[in-house]
Length: 257
Image (cartoon, rainbow, N blue to C red):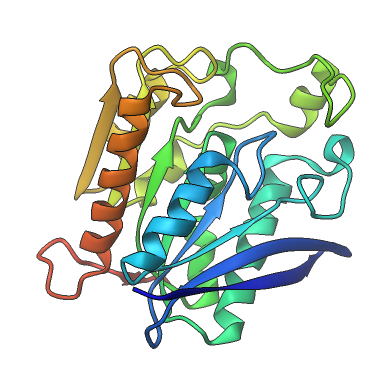
């Protein structure tokens, strides 16, 4: 299927965030909006896989840089928190809906802290008038206290992060919010060295059916295994196609108001 890409900019808290909308050549396709990990970007590996595969299968995909990341404005140290990322995500969805290039059928995708962002944004999306059809979460933390190997050391993209940064901006417990989730597929590695796999089990237990959990044996946080990546590429597309397909027995897009 032919696809096209449109560069998108939108405003959040006085900052310009940048993204790319990948569209199949069909009228009003369903849309998946992605949220990247803590130090990721719209060009992270899983985002790029979805940017290619979903439009080829008739589903639009929007990937964007959260504030302070990639090409978006903002300072990582002062503009990063779960609440601010949730605001970014809600505004990204609103921006795409206002373009009228897709249908109102929405799928959510989040990797690592991006998964937590999707969980946190789920119920609030109802105020935007979208129809939540389901989602995919990869290595998502649901309780920040479980996170291990906190990245405090400086790297080429940012200075060293003090522990106070995490204490002030990234403390959360989203267990209660997982009860609103439905039609969600979870990926997680059982050897994840950053976000323990217990998080996946906690989310899965509490969310609504239909649901599915894929635990990669020996899988790490970055999903570096080629076989795990191949399974992700196949299963994530199949999942989104199933939740968007009107005649599928599991299809229950919900318009939360």
